Length: 225
Length: 243
Image (spheres, each protein chain N blue to C red):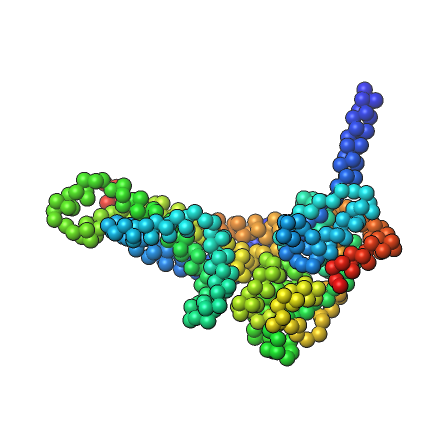
Protein backbone atom coordinates (compact mmCIF):
# COMPACT_ATOMS: atom_id res chain seq x y z
CA UNK A 1 0.00 0.00 0.00
CA UNK A 2 2.79 2.40 0.97
CA UNK A 3 4.77 1.36 -2.08
CA UNK A 4 1.73 2.19 -4.21
CA UNK A 5 1.44 5.59 -2.60
CA UNK A 6 5.13 6.25 -3.16
CA UNK A 7 4.78 5.20 -6.81
CA UNK A 8 1.90 7.60 -7.35
CA UNK A 9 3.83 10.46 -5.74
CA UNK A 10 6.62 9.77 -8.24
CA UNK A 11 4.08 9.76 -11.12
CA UNK A 12 2.47 12.99 -9.94
CA UNK A 13 5.78 14.80 -9.52
CA UNK A 14 5.55 15.46 -13.28
CA UNK A 15 2.89 18.00 -12.37
CA UNK A 16 4.81 19.66 -9.53
CA UNK A 17 6.74 22.02 -11.81
CA UNK A 18 3.50 23.10 -13.46
CA UNK A 19 1.84 23.74 -10.08
CA UNK A 20 4.85 25.75 -8.93
CA UNK A 21 5.05 27.76 -12.15
CA UNK A 22 1.33 28.60 -11.90
CA UNK A 23 1.64 29.57 -8.24
CA UNK A 24 4.75 31.74 -8.44
CA UNK A 25 3.91 33.45 -11.74
CA UNK A 26 0.49 34.35 -10.35
CA UNK A 27 2.01 35.42 -7.05
CA UNK A 28 4.40 37.78 -8.79
CA UNK A 29 1.77 39.36 -11.05
CA UNK A 30 -0.81 39.35 -8.23
CA UNK A 31 1.53 41.18 -5.88
CA UNK A 32 2.31 43.84 -8.48
CA UNK A 33 -1.43 44.29 -9.05
CA UNK A 34 -1.93 44.53 -5.29
CA UNK A 35 0.72 47.22 -4.79
CA UNK A 36 -0.74 49.29 -7.64
CA UNK A 37 -4.27 48.69 -6.36
CA UNK A 38 -3.33 49.74 -2.83
CA UNK A 39 -1.70 52.94 -4.11
CA UNK A 40 -4.73 53.75 -6.25
CA UNK A 41 -7.04 53.30 -3.26
CA UNK A 42 -5.19 56.08 -1.40
CA UNK A 43 -5.57 58.49 -4.32
CA UNK A 44 -8.20 61.18 -3.85
CA UNK A 45 -9.94 60.73 -7.24
CA UNK A 46 -13.39 59.21 -6.63
CA UNK A 47 -13.61 57.53 -10.06
CA UNK A 48 -10.28 55.71 -9.62
CA UNK A 49 -11.30 54.66 -6.14
CA UNK A 50 -14.59 53.19 -7.34
CA UNK A 51 -12.95 51.47 -10.29
CA UNK A 52 -10.57 49.63 -7.96
CA UNK A 53 -13.46 48.88 -5.59
CA UNK A 54 -15.42 47.36 -8.48
CA UNK A 55 -12.46 45.14 -9.39
CA UNK A 56 -12.12 44.01 -5.78
CA UNK A 57 -15.83 43.23 -5.43
CA UNK A 58 -15.86 41.34 -8.72
CA UNK A 59 -12.87 39.14 -7.97
CA UNK A 60 -13.41 38.52 -4.27
CA UNK A 61 -17.15 38.02 -4.69
CA UNK A 62 -17.10 35.33 -7.39
CA UNK A 63 -15.64 31.83 -7.22
CA UNK A 64 -12.17 31.32 -8.68
CA UNK A 65 -13.49 28.43 -10.77
CA UNK A 66 -16.02 30.74 -12.44
CA UNK A 67 -13.24 33.26 -13.16
CA UNK A 68 -11.05 30.57 -14.72
CA UNK A 69 -13.92 29.27 -16.90
CA UNK A 70 -14.94 32.79 -17.97
CA UNK A 71 -11.43 33.73 -19.01
CA UNK A 72 -10.71 30.42 -20.76
CA UNK A 73 -14.02 29.53 -22.44
CA UNK A 74 -15.50 33.04 -22.44
CA UNK A 75 -12.61 34.62 -24.36
CA UNK A 76 -13.17 32.23 -27.25
CA UNK A 77 -16.73 33.46 -27.79
CA UNK A 78 -15.69 36.84 -29.22
CA UNK A 79 -14.69 36.78 -32.86
CA UNK A 80 -12.85 40.12 -32.64
CA UNK A 81 -10.80 38.81 -29.73
CA UNK A 82 -9.92 35.67 -31.67
CA UNK A 83 -8.75 37.82 -34.59
CA UNK A 84 -6.66 40.07 -32.36
CA UNK A 85 -3.07 39.57 -31.25
CA UNK A 86 -4.18 38.86 -27.69
CA UNK A 87 -5.48 35.49 -28.88
CA UNK A 88 -1.91 34.17 -29.13
CA UNK A 89 -1.84 34.46 -25.34
CA UNK A 90 -5.49 33.74 -24.57
CA UNK A 91 -5.47 30.54 -26.58
CA UNK A 92 -2.89 29.16 -24.14
CA UNK A 93 -4.48 27.47 -21.10
CA UNK A 94 -1.42 28.34 -18.99
CA UNK A 95 -1.82 32.05 -19.69
CA UNK A 96 -5.56 31.97 -18.92
CA UNK A 97 -4.94 30.17 -15.64
CA UNK A 98 -2.20 32.61 -14.57
CA UNK A 99 -4.39 35.55 -15.58
CA UNK A 100 -7.33 34.31 -13.49
CA UNK A 101 -5.14 33.36 -10.52
CA UNK A 102 -3.23 36.69 -10.59
CA UNK A 103 -6.39 38.79 -10.78
CA UNK A 104 -7.90 36.77 -7.94
CA UNK A 105 -4.77 36.83 -5.81
CA UNK A 106 -4.27 40.52 -6.64
CA UNK A 107 -7.75 41.38 -5.37
CA UNK A 108 -7.31 39.59 -2.05
CA UNK A 109 -3.80 40.94 -1.55
CA UNK A 110 -4.99 44.50 -2.29
CA UNK A 111 -7.54 44.15 0.50
CA UNK A 112 -4.78 42.83 2.75
CA UNK A 113 -2.31 45.63 1.98
CA UNK A 114 -4.98 48.29 2.11
CA UNK A 115 -6.16 46.97 5.47
CA UNK A 116 -2.61 47.10 6.83
CA UNK A 117 -2.15 50.63 5.50
CA UNK A 118 -5.37 51.87 7.06
CA UNK A 119 -4.52 50.23 10.38
CA UNK A 120 -1.49 52.49 10.68
CA UNK A 121 -2.06 54.93 13.46
CA UNK A 122 -3.63 58.23 12.38
CA UNK A 123 -0.88 60.02 14.23
CA UNK A 124 1.74 58.74 11.81
CA UNK A 125 -0.14 60.15 8.81
CA UNK A 126 -0.54 63.42 10.63
CA UNK A 127 3.10 63.62 11.65
CA UNK A 128 4.12 63.08 8.01
CA UNK A 129 1.76 65.87 6.99
CA UNK A 130 3.01 68.19 9.69
CA UNK A 131 6.54 67.64 8.41
CA UNK A 132 5.28 69.02 5.11
CA UNK A 133 5.46 65.73 3.18
CA UNK A 134 3.45 65.28 0.01
CA UNK A 135 1.05 62.34 -0.51
CA UNK A 136 3.65 60.27 -2.38
CA UNK A 137 6.35 61.01 0.17
CA UNK A 138 4.02 59.96 3.00
CA UNK A 139 3.28 56.71 1.18
CA UNK A 140 6.98 56.09 0.67
CA UNK A 141 7.47 56.22 4.41
CA UNK A 142 4.37 54.35 5.50
CA UNK A 143 3.99 51.76 2.72
CA UNK A 144 7.02 49.57 3.66
CA UNK A 145 5.83 49.61 7.23
CA UNK A 146 2.34 48.53 6.19
CA UNK A 147 3.66 45.83 3.86
CA UNK A 148 5.71 44.35 6.68
CA UNK A 149 2.61 44.43 8.86
CA UNK A 150 0.67 42.55 6.18
CA UNK A 151 3.37 39.93 5.71
CA UNK A 152 2.06 37.13 7.99
CA UNK A 153 -1.37 37.27 6.33
CA UNK A 154 0.38 37.44 2.97
CA UNK A 155 2.15 34.10 3.56
CA UNK A 156 -1.28 32.65 4.10
CA UNK A 157 -2.29 34.03 0.71
CA UNK A 158 0.58 32.11 -0.92
CA UNK A 159 -0.72 28.88 0.58
CA UNK A 160 -4.25 29.68 -0.65
CA UNK A 161 -2.88 30.42 -4.09
CA UNK A 162 -1.03 27.12 -4.30
CA UNK A 163 -4.18 25.25 -3.36
CA UNK A 164 -6.29 27.36 -5.72
CA UNK A 165 -3.97 26.56 -8.60
CA UNK A 166 -5.39 23.01 -8.58
CA UNK A 167 -8.52 24.44 -10.26
CA UNK A 168 -6.41 25.08 -13.37
CA UNK A 169 -6.71 21.36 -14.07
CA UNK A 170 -10.30 22.05 -15.20
CA UNK A 171 -8.97 23.90 -18.24
CA UNK A 172 -6.77 20.99 -19.37
CA UNK A 173 -3.61 22.00 -17.50
CA UNK A 174 -1.53 19.05 -16.33
CA UNK A 175 -0.55 20.20 -12.85
CA UNK A 176 -0.55 17.88 -9.83
CA UNK A 177 -4.35 17.71 -9.93
CA UNK A 178 -4.41 17.21 -13.71
CA UNK A 179 -2.01 14.28 -13.45
CA UNK A 180 -3.89 12.71 -10.58
CA UNK A 181 -7.12 12.86 -12.56
CA UNK A 182 -5.41 11.20 -15.48
CA UNK A 183 -3.79 8.48 -13.37
CA UNK A 184 -7.03 7.91 -11.48
CA UNK A 185 -8.83 7.45 -14.78
CA UNK A 186 -6.30 4.83 -15.80
CA UNK A 187 -5.93 2.90 -12.55
CA UNK A 188 -9.26 3.57 -10.73
CA UNK A 189 -7.19 3.56 -7.54
CA UNK A 190 -8.97 6.72 -6.38
CA UNK A 191 -8.06 6.75 -2.70
CA UNK A 192 -4.33 6.24 -3.23
CA UNK A 193 -4.00 8.57 -6.21
CA UNK A 194 -5.73 11.54 -4.61
CA UNK A 195 -4.10 10.68 -1.28
CA UNK A 196 -0.74 11.06 -3.01
CA UNK A 197 -1.88 14.36 -4.57
CA UNK A 198 -2.96 15.62 -1.14
CA UNK A 199 0.40 14.65 0.36
CA UNK A 200 2.29 16.47 -2.41
CA UNK A 201 0.28 19.67 -1.91
CA UNK A 202 0.80 19.39 1.84
CA UNK A 203 4.55 18.94 1.39
CA UNK A 204 4.83 21.93 -0.96
CA UNK A 205 2.83 24.08 1.44
CA UNK A 206 5.01 23.02 4.38
CA UNK A 207 8.16 23.98 2.51
CA UNK A 208 6.67 27.33 1.49
CA UNK A 209 5.46 28.03 5.02
CA UNK A 210 8.86 27.29 6.54
CA UNK A 211 10.59 29.63 4.07
CA UNK A 212 8.03 32.37 4.62
CA UNK A 213 8.48 32.06 8.40
CA UNK A 214 12.26 32.35 8.15
CA UNK A 215 11.91 35.41 5.96
CA UNK A 216 9.30 36.87 8.30
CA UNK A 217 11.72 36.69 11.22
CA UNK A 218 14.26 38.80 9.34
CA UNK A 219 11.67 41.17 7.98
CA UNK A 220 10.03 41.85 11.31
CA UNK A 221 13.31 41.81 13.24
CA UNK A 222 12.85 45.50 14.05
CA UNK A 223 9.84 44.64 16.21
CA UNK A 224 11.54 41.93 18.26
CA UNK A 225 13.75 43.99 20.49
CA UNK B 1 -34.83 -15.89 23.89
CA UNK B 2 -34.03 -17.71 20.67
CA UNK B 3 -37.36 -16.76 19.23
CA UNK B 4 -36.66 -13.11 19.97
CA UNK B 5 -33.35 -13.18 18.09
CA UNK B 6 -35.00 -14.99 15.22
CA UNK B 7 -37.74 -12.39 15.07
CA UNK B 8 -35.20 -9.54 14.95
CA UNK B 9 -33.24 -11.36 12.23
CA UNK B 10 -36.34 -11.87 10.15
CA UNK B 11 -37.28 -8.21 10.56
CA UNK B 12 -33.80 -7.06 9.57
CA UNK B 13 -33.77 -9.33 6.55
CA UNK B 14 -37.15 -8.18 5.34
CA UNK B 15 -36.18 -4.53 5.79
CA UNK B 16 -32.95 -4.97 3.85
CA UNK B 17 -34.59 -6.93 1.04
CA UNK B 18 -37.31 -4.30 0.81
CA UNK B 19 -34.73 -1.55 0.51
CA UNK B 20 -32.88 -3.58 -2.08
CA UNK B 21 -35.92 -4.24 -4.20
CA UNK B 22 -37.35 -0.76 -4.41
CA UNK B 23 -35.01 1.43 -6.38
CA UNK B 24 -32.06 1.30 -8.75
CA UNK B 25 -29.83 4.37 -8.46
CA UNK B 26 -28.21 5.09 -11.81
CA UNK B 27 -25.17 7.38 -12.10
CA UNK B 28 -24.22 9.15 -15.31
CA UNK B 29 -22.18 12.02 -16.73
CA UNK B 30 -24.92 14.06 -18.34
CA UNK B 31 -23.19 16.09 -21.06
CA UNK B 32 -23.16 13.32 -23.62
CA UNK B 33 -25.96 13.72 -26.12
CA UNK B 34 -27.68 11.68 -27.50
CA UNK B 35 -26.92 9.21 -24.69
CA UNK B 36 -27.46 11.41 -21.64
CA UNK B 37 -27.87 15.15 -21.32
CA UNK B 38 -30.09 17.64 -19.57
CA UNK B 39 -32.92 19.22 -21.57
CA UNK B 40 -34.27 22.76 -21.28
CA UNK B 41 -36.36 21.72 -18.26
CA UNK B 42 -33.25 20.46 -16.45
CA UNK B 43 -34.37 16.85 -16.77
CA UNK B 44 -31.84 14.19 -17.73
CA UNK B 45 -32.89 12.65 -21.01
CA UNK B 46 -31.30 10.53 -23.70
CA UNK B 47 -30.99 7.01 -25.04
CA UNK B 48 -29.38 5.67 -21.87
CA UNK B 49 -32.03 7.32 -19.68
CA UNK B 50 -34.92 5.86 -21.66
CA UNK B 51 -33.23 2.49 -21.70
CA UNK B 52 -32.72 2.55 -17.92
CA UNK B 53 -36.34 3.52 -17.40
CA UNK B 54 -37.49 0.68 -19.62
CA UNK B 55 -35.29 -1.77 -17.70
CA UNK B 56 -36.68 -0.55 -14.38
CA UNK B 57 -40.21 -0.92 -15.66
CA UNK B 58 -39.41 -4.45 -16.78
CA UNK B 59 -37.99 -5.22 -13.33
CA UNK B 60 -40.83 -3.35 -11.60
CA UNK B 61 -38.46 -1.09 -9.73
CA UNK B 62 -38.11 2.62 -9.37
CA UNK B 63 -35.31 4.46 -11.17
CA UNK B 64 -33.37 7.48 -10.01
CA UNK B 65 -30.65 9.29 -11.91
CA UNK B 66 -27.60 10.98 -10.41
CA UNK B 67 -25.18 13.21 -12.25
CA UNK B 68 -21.45 12.59 -11.71
CA UNK B 69 -18.26 13.39 -13.55
CA UNK B 70 -17.29 10.56 -15.88
CA UNK B 71 -13.96 9.77 -14.26
CA UNK B 72 -15.59 9.26 -10.85
CA UNK B 73 -18.33 6.84 -11.99
CA UNK B 74 -16.37 3.65 -11.39
CA UNK B 75 -15.09 4.85 -8.02
CA UNK B 76 -18.67 5.68 -6.99
CA UNK B 77 -19.79 2.16 -7.85
CA UNK B 78 -16.92 0.70 -5.85
CA UNK B 79 -17.92 2.82 -2.86
CA UNK B 80 -21.57 1.76 -3.42
CA UNK B 81 -22.78 5.32 -3.73
CA UNK B 82 -24.95 4.16 -6.64
CA UNK B 83 -26.22 0.81 -7.84
CA UNK B 84 -25.37 1.13 -11.51
CA UNK B 85 -23.67 3.41 -14.01
CA UNK B 86 -25.20 3.85 -17.45
CA UNK B 87 -23.20 6.53 -19.15
CA UNK B 88 -22.09 5.51 -22.61
CA UNK B 89 -19.40 3.41 -20.97
CA UNK B 90 -17.38 1.06 -23.15
CA UNK B 91 -16.79 -2.43 -21.83
CA UNK B 92 -13.00 -2.81 -21.51
CA UNK B 93 -10.72 -5.35 -19.80
CA UNK B 94 -9.40 -2.67 -17.35
CA UNK B 95 -12.86 -1.61 -16.29
CA UNK B 96 -13.97 -5.23 -15.94
CA UNK B 97 -11.35 -5.63 -13.21
CA UNK B 98 -13.13 -2.89 -11.26
CA UNK B 99 -16.82 -3.43 -11.97
CA UNK B 100 -19.27 -5.92 -13.47
CA UNK B 101 -20.77 -5.13 -16.86
CA UNK B 102 -24.12 -6.10 -18.31
CA UNK B 103 -24.24 -7.46 -21.84
CA UNK B 104 -23.50 -4.74 -24.43
CA UNK B 105 -26.57 -2.61 -25.11
CA UNK B 106 -25.17 -0.39 -27.85
CA UNK B 107 -22.61 -1.04 -30.59
CA UNK B 108 -19.92 1.58 -30.54
CA UNK B 109 -17.08 2.91 -32.65
CA UNK B 110 -14.81 5.93 -32.33
CA UNK B 111 -13.92 8.60 -34.85
CA UNK B 112 -11.74 11.71 -35.26
CA UNK B 113 -13.40 15.00 -36.13
CA UNK B 114 -11.64 18.05 -37.61
CA UNK B 115 -12.40 21.12 -39.64
CA UNK B 116 -13.78 20.16 -43.06
CA UNK B 117 -11.10 19.80 -45.72
CA UNK B 118 -8.22 20.80 -43.44
CA UNK B 119 -6.64 17.35 -43.24
CA UNK B 120 -6.80 14.31 -45.48
CA UNK B 121 -5.54 11.59 -43.14
CA UNK B 122 -5.09 10.86 -39.47
CA UNK B 123 -1.29 10.84 -39.85
CA UNK B 124 -1.32 14.60 -40.41
CA UNK B 125 -2.48 15.08 -36.82
CA UNK B 126 0.72 13.57 -35.40
CA UNK B 127 2.22 16.87 -34.27
CA UNK B 128 -1.07 18.60 -33.48
CA UNK B 129 -3.34 18.60 -30.44
CA UNK B 130 -6.20 16.15 -30.08
CA UNK B 131 -8.93 16.78 -27.50
CA UNK B 132 -10.29 13.82 -25.55
CA UNK B 133 -12.47 13.24 -22.51
CA UNK B 134 -10.44 12.48 -19.39
CA UNK B 135 -10.87 8.88 -18.25
CA UNK B 136 -12.38 7.77 -21.54
CA UNK B 137 -11.37 4.79 -23.64
CA UNK B 138 -10.41 7.31 -26.33
CA UNK B 139 -7.74 8.78 -24.08
CA UNK B 140 -6.38 5.34 -23.30
CA UNK B 141 -6.46 4.28 -26.94
CA UNK B 142 -4.32 7.23 -28.01
CA UNK B 143 -1.90 6.99 -25.08
CA UNK B 144 -1.39 3.27 -25.66
CA UNK B 145 -1.13 3.32 -29.44
CA UNK B 146 0.39 6.74 -30.14
CA UNK B 147 2.35 7.59 -26.99
CA UNK B 148 3.96 10.63 -28.61
CA UNK B 149 0.66 12.20 -29.66
CA UNK B 150 -0.20 15.41 -27.81
CA UNK B 151 -3.62 15.10 -26.20
CA UNK B 152 -5.62 17.66 -24.27
CA UNK B 153 -7.83 16.16 -21.52
CA UNK B 154 -11.31 17.63 -20.89
CA UNK B 155 -13.80 16.84 -18.15
CA UNK B 156 -16.55 16.77 -20.77
CA UNK B 157 -16.28 16.12 -24.48
CA UNK B 158 -18.50 19.21 -24.96
CA UNK B 159 -15.63 21.39 -23.69
CA UNK B 160 -13.36 19.77 -26.25
CA UNK B 161 -15.86 20.72 -28.98
CA UNK B 162 -15.83 24.35 -27.75
CA UNK B 163 -12.04 24.44 -27.90
CA UNK B 164 -12.03 22.86 -31.35
CA UNK B 165 -14.27 25.72 -32.51
CA UNK B 166 -12.06 28.23 -30.72
CA UNK B 167 -9.00 26.83 -32.47
CA UNK B 168 -7.15 25.75 -29.34
CA UNK B 169 -7.06 22.14 -30.53
CA UNK B 170 -7.00 20.63 -34.01
CA UNK B 171 -9.16 17.53 -33.60
CA UNK B 172 -11.46 15.71 -31.17
CA UNK B 173 -11.47 11.95 -30.79
CA UNK B 174 -14.71 10.50 -29.45
CA UNK B 175 -17.73 8.26 -29.87
CA UNK B 176 -19.32 8.26 -33.31
CA UNK B 177 -22.89 8.86 -32.11
CA UNK B 178 -21.88 11.82 -29.93
CA UNK B 179 -19.76 13.37 -32.68
CA UNK B 180 -22.52 12.89 -35.25
CA UNK B 181 -24.98 14.63 -32.95
CA UNK B 182 -22.59 17.57 -32.58
CA UNK B 183 -21.91 17.72 -36.34
CA UNK B 184 -25.60 18.45 -36.96
CA UNK B 185 -25.07 21.83 -35.27
CA UNK B 186 -21.55 22.40 -36.61
CA UNK B 187 -21.54 21.82 -40.36
CA UNK B 188 -18.03 23.30 -40.82
CA UNK B 189 -16.57 20.13 -39.27
CA UNK B 190 -16.39 16.56 -40.55
CA UNK B 191 -15.15 13.11 -39.49
CA UNK B 192 -11.59 12.29 -40.53
CA UNK B 193 -10.66 8.83 -41.75
CA UNK B 194 -12.33 5.51 -40.93
CA UNK B 195 -14.22 4.53 -37.81
CA UNK B 196 -11.90 3.10 -35.17
CA UNK B 197 -13.02 -0.26 -33.78
CA UNK B 198 -10.60 -1.91 -31.39
CA UNK B 199 -11.97 -4.68 -29.17
CA UNK B 200 -9.68 -3.68 -26.31
CA UNK B 201 -11.13 -0.16 -26.21
CA UNK B 202 -14.47 0.52 -27.85
CA UNK B 203 -15.16 -2.50 -30.02
CA UNK B 204 -17.35 -4.36 -27.56
CA UNK B 205 -19.98 -1.71 -27.09
CA UNK B 206 -21.51 0.08 -24.13
CA UNK B 207 -22.43 -1.79 -20.97
CA UNK B 208 -24.19 -0.97 -17.71
CA UNK B 209 -21.69 -1.19 -14.85
CA UNK B 210 -22.49 -2.41 -11.32
CA UNK B 211 -20.46 -3.14 -8.21
CA UNK B 212 -18.45 -6.37 -8.53
CA UNK B 213 -20.38 -7.96 -5.67
CA UNK B 214 -23.75 -7.14 -7.16
CA UNK B 215 -24.09 -10.17 -9.45
CA UNK B 216 -27.81 -10.28 -8.73
CA UNK B 217 -28.46 -6.83 -10.21
CA UNK B 218 -26.24 -7.54 -13.21
CA UNK B 219 -28.21 -10.73 -13.95
CA UNK B 220 -31.52 -8.91 -13.55
CA UNK B 221 -30.38 -6.15 -15.94
CA UNK B 222 -29.21 -8.72 -18.51
CA UNK B 223 -32.52 -10.53 -18.29
CA UNK B 224 -34.47 -7.30 -18.64
CA UNK B 225 -32.32 -6.28 -21.63
CA UNK B 226 -33.16 -9.59 -23.34
CA UNK B 227 -36.83 -9.06 -22.61
CA UNK B 228 -37.06 -5.50 -23.97
CA UNK B 229 -35.22 -6.59 -27.10
CA UNK B 230 -37.82 -9.31 -27.63
CA UNK B 231 -40.89 -7.19 -26.92
CA UNK B 232 -39.74 -4.34 -29.16
CA UNK B 233 -39.24 -1.63 -26.50
CA UNK B 234 -35.48 -1.50 -27.16
CA UNK B 235 -36.05 -0.96 -30.88
CA UNK B 236 -38.52 1.86 -30.15
CA UNK B 237 -36.00 3.66 -27.93
CA UNK B 238 -33.25 3.15 -30.50
CA UNK B 239 -35.51 4.57 -33.20
CA UNK B 240 -36.35 7.58 -31.04
CA UNK B 241 -32.71 8.66 -30.56
CA UNK B 242 -30.86 7.51 -33.65
CA UNK B 243 -33.20 8.26 -36.55
